[in-house]
Length: 250
Ligand code: HEM
Image (tube, rainbow, N blue to C red; front, side, top):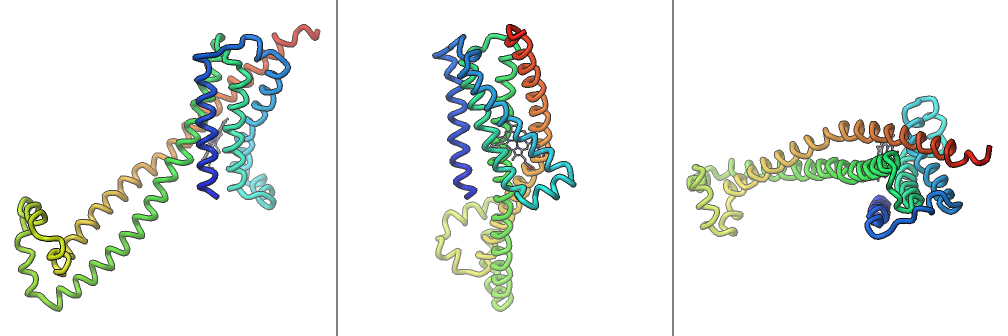
């Protein structure tokens, strides 16, 4: 399910970027103000407010309790993600690639930034968590294998002499090139040495992944702040549209 979501959302984000880049070959100054352009604007903007609803539900305990009786937070996040990409696709169509006013350009730039940041957070940041899970599992298996080799070494202490060529930094590199793979893996002390090397590589990889995972908190703050800037600009744009665009109703 998650894999399907990832493929679909990636496709939608690519479509969004292609539609935005369309401004290099196309502009329609009239479309944004036409009836069709207006429909794209209203539906797109409404969808862009769905992520705000997600945040309200997530942050207000009373609301969260009553909403999650019917819909899980996971489902709400899925709605957030789809609405957060489909809304921007519709509003990009609404622009007709008429990027002339400072507000219009800023609004488009913030929309792109929010969508891309959401995408990065969802699929890159969460990748670090799953990497850590897999690596910890592998680490446990290696620790078990190491303990087994240690038991074998204890039963045959004379084999420890095999470790001599590996005692120095350079001799270890040379020995690992010239001693055959089979000879290496058939001896318990050398297998134990290889396992300790793999353990230290894995521990380093886990630390690196944990470091990046810690950035998730920073990412979320960034995503929230730019979302609020986006909502501010969007409200200003809607107000300007009603005030200047619809004044002939008066
Ligand atoms: C109009 C576009 C979007 C807006 C305005 C928006 C806004 C927000 C806001 C306000 C939050 C904070 C929720 C909270 O923790 O209180 C949030 C979280 C998040 N957003 Fe977005 N977002 C948008 C699009 C996207 C997209 C396209 C994706 C993914 C492809 C995405 C992924 C996420 C994720 C993973 C979180 C963290 C959820 C959690 O940990 O609870 N967002 N977004």
